[in-house]
Length: 262
Image (cartoon, rainbow, N blue to C red; front, side, top):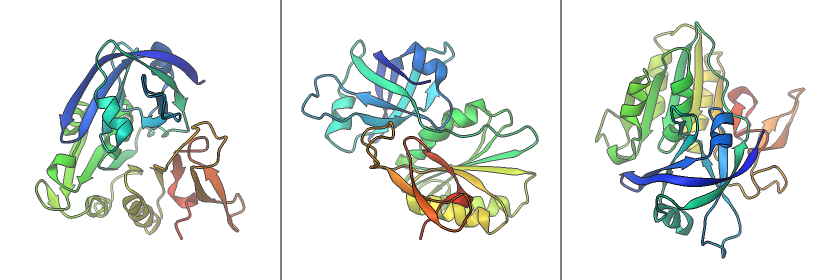
């Protein structure tokens, strides 16, 4: 069930580089959110921009009332968000979208995260009944997020960077291919990140007769399925063709086997 709630800012701090974390006291939404879902945020004192901004939920604290969002300053909206102070309020709509399915006991959860995708998958790792293998990639070491948090949640963390500044030099899907080559028991693969990474994840799992849940990050306007701005292509039920599906309502999490890239 989604709620509209006035959320008070508890903290808003810089993590590293252009990445920030904002903690919001929002008891109804925090209690209902599932891994992979998102909230639609309306900033205070930002009336000249009418549309809300979608943000994946990173975590919910131990009290069950404080929701955490990790975001990157990339434009006017997120720059405004970075300037908000503790005690101010934002208007939240959520939780929205279809999230990840928790891995079954006996499976081997494998989470592939590119850049900001680490924030969208952290709650999945934290709530997994089985410790997850978490593969995190970024352009540079500055783009690697939440490494210590994932490790504290019991995950086994491996990293890659395009420039080799930390971990494996190359793309994060190199780590996925290597891990799948060890034939882990009942791998349950999840991914969130840039579309080229997600496409490579889909190709890697499908080539091995596996499937994955992938979060298709896409531009959203209304966030509730009304405007059809955020559509992606998914196979039809009979597999004979494809149709447009809304990431804000039918996703953002879809099956790799159902996603059409061409």
